[in-house]
Length: 317
Image (cartoon, rainbow, N blue to C red; front, top):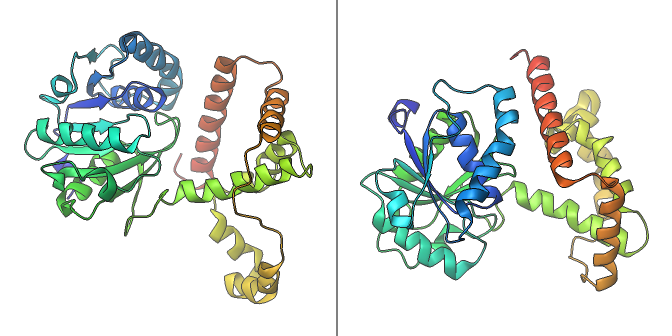
């Protein structure tokens, strides 16, 4: 489906007003859309307002769509009320499988004809979440990266009962709004990006648990090392370049034997109280006493600067 098929969507229902749901709401508002939100928490409206207000400076810096209005958001008393009249539904409830099943069934039943219901789940396959829905054909995964208003990636994949039109429409909608979309070929627990991120995270926990590295050293190893290459070339293209003129073939032939070296542990270490305390203390050292709001603002400024620098290097500035 072309982008013209989703250009008429002007209202999005955001179900869940936490960090992810609120981040989505801020992004949709920045694209000139109206948002109808629902969350069972009694302070949902105030929390959503704080998230949008905190995100708006970064979104303004990136560039707002015509008609973008941070006030074009309404918090409704029920999920069905939020879905009514919405052209797209983004569910961002907590990662609880039974909760997802019942909520997605409710949303699918309330959504109008042709309206896609996308889940922000970070790991559950849609085939597992859609089991209670009378009509699972419109249910898809639209997995963002935190914060959704700033990180462009969205991974889109349907379940066994998802209709092709639904995944196509979801992908087209996200692209229309400026997102970078991966349409996955098949369901995969944890999707693509989370699995790669989790591999690094497990290695980091092992090194801290074994006293081999501190959280600060691990963070610097990425921010001042391979992380500088990854905004331009991902891990596969990075290793292709490592092979010189011979490319990936030379790299694999030359360094292939080292893949058998016992460097990686991969299995998750036991999260002992000692390891937990070490990670918390290390994160506090890295934060340097700065409040969370300052760290978020720093991250947002840096990500914007990196995105602009990469776009300029690619000639897309």
